[in-house]
Amino acid sequence: MLNERMYKLGSQRSGIRELFEFGQQRAKIVGPENVFDFSIGNPSVPCPDEVTETLKNLLNEDPVKIHAYTSAQGLPSTREAIAESLGKRFEMDVRPQDIILTCGAAAAICTTIRALTASPDDEFMVQAPFFAEYNVFVPEQGGKLVVIEPDLETFDINIDAIEKAITQNTKGLILNSPNNPSGHVASLDTLKTLAAMLKRKSEEIGHPIYIISDEPYRELIYTDTVVPYLPQIYPDSIVCYSFSKALSLPGERIGYIHVPKDAYLSEKIVPAILGALRAMGYVCAPSLFQRAIEQNVDVRPSLDVYRENRNILSDGLKALGYRVIEPEGAFYLFVEAPGGDANAFSEKAKEKDVLVVPGDAFGCPGFMRISYCVKKDTIERALPRFAELI
Ligand code: PLP
Image 1 (cartoon, rainbow, N blue to C red):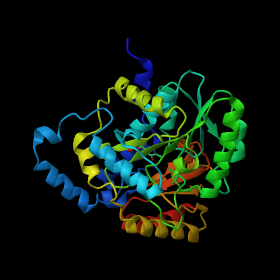
Image 2: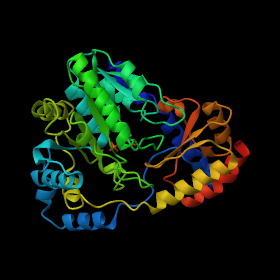
Image 3: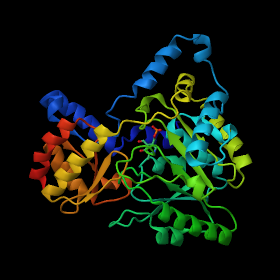
Image 4: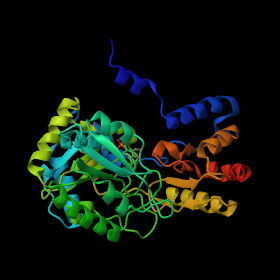
């Protein structure tokens, strides 16, 4: 006998992966240039030159050293560099012992959920639309995912709905701003109101409600909007960061967790996360990339390509009559499906070799996600096809 639950998880393909594979098959028949694949969130700009240079230099160093295991929490010098950078940027006291290097945001979220979950009744709220993998991450780490309905007009944080969903079992709220898939960025005012409500409710239920802030898109912002740093506003925020999108390193699996020193039980959360990393066999984050990050912690992505893509796609679709949720960050456009049925729209679009993901995958039917981390030319040539679909 096998673990049937794992068997199911491993054999079910996500809708996004299925579309992506459909695109690969079609590319063999009609040519890759005639498939308009907007399904996946792989960065389309190369990692910054500084990172490539650092990697080349690192490879000239002693291989025994650079490829060695590091401590489970991560190299002290890398944690120092991250702590110093966060401390300066957000004007707060961040210590190296508050940082844990991880294999990307996915490992950061899973181990944080596992560390916080004390009982199978523990609930983690998330507002739709949300990154579909939370459907796996939360229950597989022992918690329950509670989905909050979105505000379909603004896509802002639905504070009233969150408040109503809080129970004695509420352990945390997963926030993801800039958001995948809507591109929405929560404002400072909204986060302050949310923090005040969570503080009041935490007192009412007699234990803290943690925010798990999933931030792979923190640096991908196209307007003047400032992405607030949650620990400044709400100390019980655990930040799960990743270099996957900002430095275009998604396959290298590198990110970190910041547990603010003022978070309730912070002195126990860090070892509990290290315990979860150990239980899940992570050992340590990739050694070469810990070293590479240490030297590039303040390198920011070039946003020109994504900004231009965003503008062409958003303006183009609006001109055709589509309702577009104007994205401030990340690299996705969330668009209302004409006729209201995103699955039907996605199927119709597939017939034209245009691949868009129905919002059902993100807990938000009736909308579709269009990833614009693609070539500009793909967007420009796809617009006439979108015109035929409305
Ligand atoms: N969280 C969100 C919202 C994402 O969109 C992704 C990846 O697309 C992840 C987490 C996982 O990121 P990582 O590659 O760092 O594991």
